[in-house]
Length: 278
Ligand code: ADP
Ligand code: MG
Image (cartoon, rainbow, N blue to C red; front, side):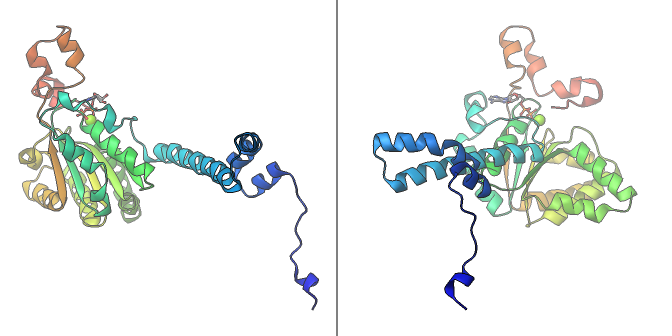
């Protein structure tokens, strides 16, 4: 067999745009010509030019990844830690929270529990951690405990609980918001326990609650079950206990529209049903 018969035929193609399309490098294709002109004018080396266009391709891919995975994670809004005003919540240790943003706790499959009254930024902090996790390509899913248990209960009724549970075990970071705003039924509390047990030491939970641990017996309708849940949640965890005023009501209060009491943690108890979805 001659050498030429072994050669894989290649389409002769000298069109850079077509080559980039074939190689799935749209950003390189978009920038190549303009950057080549700049490279010539500024006397870049060949490798500088290649690094420049490939870096743009990597950045564009990362941006697309973050957008699509942010959508898939169901985060309720976009907030970063830099948008969090620590001076407004002196009970929080800023250095500790910034350390949490390194996400070493997610690498270690540990949990984050954020406690505090409505409006102090519990969801904000969890969303900031989740956003950073997405940037670092860690799988994230965000859900309120109400939606979670409703979904698990439906799956239970339809005999597909194990499959559905698997879906909530899979993300490396599962954020569960608003624990404690509404009490759970006995079945719901049991299904939630199964989820916590299934994720224990396997994947991280970031959980927010307006109720202190002493009240979790009521939330889960059963002190024994609450203890079993807490035991697994807390074992490897960081607990942030925010003991401040609602940020939402801050401006209204400073404008004199609310009395002091209205902006205090007891607010939730004063509203119908004692619940404040946040
Ligand atoms: P919670 O979950 O504790 O009820 P949220 O995280 O929903 O509170 O916060 C309510 C609103 O106030 C959000 O828009 C959030 O970004 C903002 N917020 C809360 N605390 C702060 C803070 N310390 N600095 C900046 N924004 C804050
Ligand atoms: Mg909230």
